[in-house]
Length: 418
Image (cartoon, rainbow, N blue to C red; front, side, top):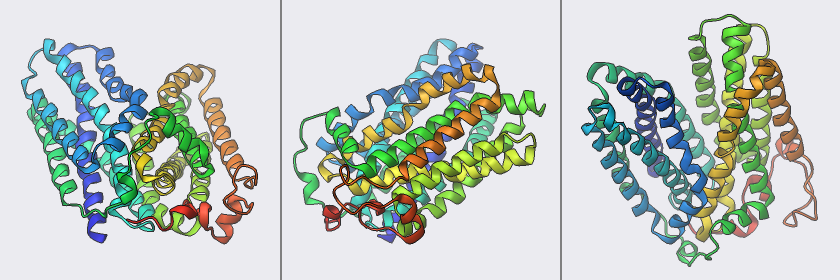
């Protein structure tokens, strides 16, 4: 299993580098070819648009062998990236948009596919650690890859970046093939043909999934809601150079790396519910610290928020992996991804409109919503809604340890073959 853990973290490093480098360069390339800022921004929309069909794409992962599908997706993505070698004129920018859309579809299949594959590659107790390490690897690449991609673009142009990015999924496909998987007989059973309803039913039917996925969705959405507010706070309210936003981004990235390294141990000791609650609360504290009229406070807030946000995400992903029947894991993972990342598409434009009321009111409102969600999630479990164990609060689990459902492991799944 240790070998698989190393391979999976390496996969996150390689895929994170390739996607982060290309995501920045795609917009710059379109801008250079067309001179249109609006067209350059549409490249990002192409990446996020496929989130709307995530639950239906997830059904593929329950009907097809997961590892071959992940390998094929990476190889097709590499082929799509190599098609960018033909881009020379403004009339060929449609290829860049098409590749951005392909990236968006691949994100859905790969994220949900990895979530569904990991329980066959790792033991139950390793899932939290490896999910945290993968989160740290991805955040680390977000700090390094955009600068590397922009530098390579300035040196040799878009085709060079496309070639480098295409090499990443090819290597990732080889690493997927090298994984040693434990057969899970239950996962070979035919999944019920209920499409979207199957994923929603599982998410809604278990409190551990409702709470952790909900906390991640709210926290990620609030990160989008406050984007415009941070721009205004830095450049208008504090009168700092716009480049200071890069300092905040790096500080948040550093916090995310540290948070990713710690979250596995926190899940093992306290459970996914407690970690999700703590992550939402930390993110809210980070937002409040950014309201301070003092730039070191903003940097500290960025670090704290960087720790909290990945905790909510890793808690949600780990809960899905440990609390979902194997035959439905693909569509539940895809539905959970849509639930966690879909709201940000609405939150970003809403935040852009709300910033006209002031930057700090937007930050305070977002922090209040995260704290309210954490407080609701920390309430004792009702015996009417959670019959699998005695009533207890997430706070008591955090202070005194957790077991059973509070650890994100349903009793009926503890003996599931790996």
